[in-house]
Amino acid sequence: KNEVEQSPQNLTAQEGEFITINCSYSVGISALHWLQQHPGGGIVSLFMLSSGKKKHGRLIATINIQEKHSSLHITASHPRDSAVYICAVALTQGGSEKLVFGKGTKLTVNP
Amino acid sequence: DTGVSQDPRHKITKRGQNVTFRCDPISEHNRLYWYRQTLGQGPEFLTYFQNEAQLEKSRLLSDRFSAERPKGSFSTLEIQRTEQGDSAMYLCASSLTSYNEQFFGPGTRLTVL
Image (cartoon, rainbow over all chains, first blue to last red; front, top):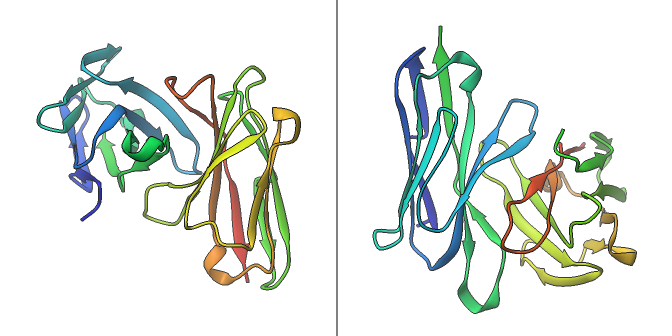
């Protein structure tokens, strides 16, 4: 079992729909990152959070430390939101500071 | 543009050749990370530096791989005697400290024929 699991793997939506991508993890973490990757490979950091909720424009990220779960929400989705969304956790085990990544959720927003 | 640059963007090489990639982080960032990403997968951690010190290496990093960060600025990742299984996107990221977000470069796509 991977330390970081994302769902769904693929998601197709119509423009304007509310999107939710989920991330569950099984280890102790110091922080959780949500990243966006467009075709061609470039990765952009969307959020880094260790508790509660953060909002940036149409994007909202929440984390529940007790349940080891985070969600990324996109309100009023747009075709330009089409990308792969990756959840990554910063481990705290054994002094390690590496990030462990989920496999990503491929989002396609149709006009 | 995140401020992190990587060179080259694409590299095609024959099996058995050596390749070297370069990463230039954001200038004031102390932390520099290398990741590898294969098609359809999330990135995997390879190694990271705090200034010029290499603090952690993944078991994925066989003895054919070596990374350096002389003077705590740019970093290089060298793969000796490349194998077809080394074909992947190699990503570099930097951060101010371990508690800050990471800024990713555009990646170097390696194809080993």
